[in-house]
Structure formats: C-alpha cells, structure tokens
Image 1 (cartoon, helix red, strand yellow):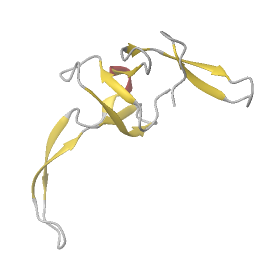
Image 2: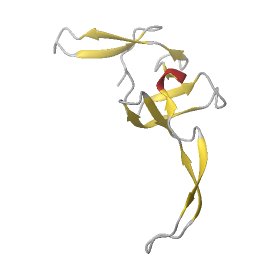
Image 3: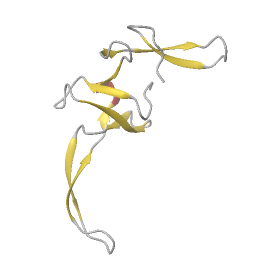
Image 4: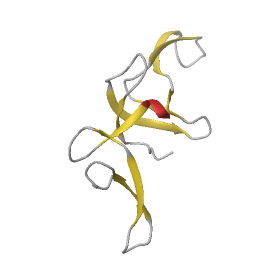
Length: 103
C-alpha cells in the first residue's frame, strides 16, 4: 500500500465518490484507510463515568482501492510510483502524471 497518514486523497468509488479529504489512519493488515470527513456512520455509545452517551458521528474505514492520491502539481487524481532517490538511496513516491514527488 502506497498511502500514508496525512496524504490528500479523493474517493473514486462507492457512495462517497468525489469526496476529498486527508488520511487520518492507515490500516495496513485490512488494506483500509480512514479519511477525514468521508464515510460518516452513526455509532451508539454507552456512557461511562467520564463521557456522556449518545449517537456519535465517526469516520468508518474505506477500502484503499477506492481512493486515489491527489497530484500536488495538477490537483487531479493520480497513480503512485516508487523510485530510488540517487542522493540518499531511499525509496520515494512519485506521481505518475507529473513525476512530482509526494511530501
């Protein structure tokens, strides 16, 4: 999975298609991500001494295949490639559309 926390993504499939947001959490083993403001569900919470109960709105995980990174240069969805940096010999993620590296 080539997604990281803090990446700007757009949803490309499902009921939230077209929504944009940043990744809050990556669930690698389940191949899912939690995107801020996307896939909102109601969760019924029971009160426990410190917090009151009620119906909370939380973001549910969405499959990683249903999101695409947003290209930093063109601001459009793009696929992600990996290349080796010649100076540091480390892997860096690049945009397939504009060959810009992701921060």
